[in-house]
Image (cartoon, rainbow, N blue to C red; front, side):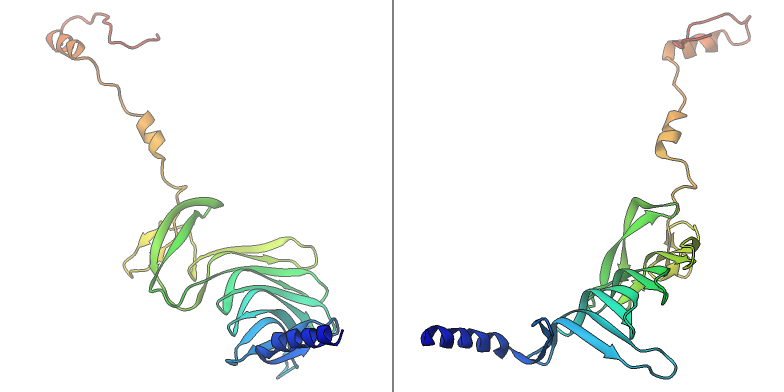
Length: 235
């Protein structure tokens, strides 16, 4: 029995020995871990007091190698949820939602994180009139750590109705212009709804008449018009 107790104690010490610092929650969870290299790891709870007129708040989420990763939820100091933010490599990525103190959805943002190790990146391009329709992929130069990218929606928090919608392409507000490089060398959004499709153009091609019909019409040009067969049907 004493041997088993010593063994379990050794496992427990080895488990906590990999952390330089940590706290134990009321539920027995290991939180706010700092590894031996001084990096935040795993689940964390952060507290911020009110400062210079800004209200204080608490937030909880995960750290990976000292950087926020995944979903982080923010609460007011009285426990109301006021924000949900998604992170990748320590910066916002994907959807973020912000709420009023009474729980009404105020706005929804869309972000795109970039890998700082890359100088170029491939970005999906969607139809400005149908955000679910992928129409192209472009290679762009990596600038900064993240960009406004996608749909930003602003709501009336009381009624839940949409007040305004904006679409961004790598921090550039979309206006419906064609995608391509302008005089300033910047990439502009793609609008595929303004042009005609290839199938529309192909359907309007004229049918070439047979060689014999063309020779006959040439020989009889200027003569009394007679009905000829040109391969077409109908009246």
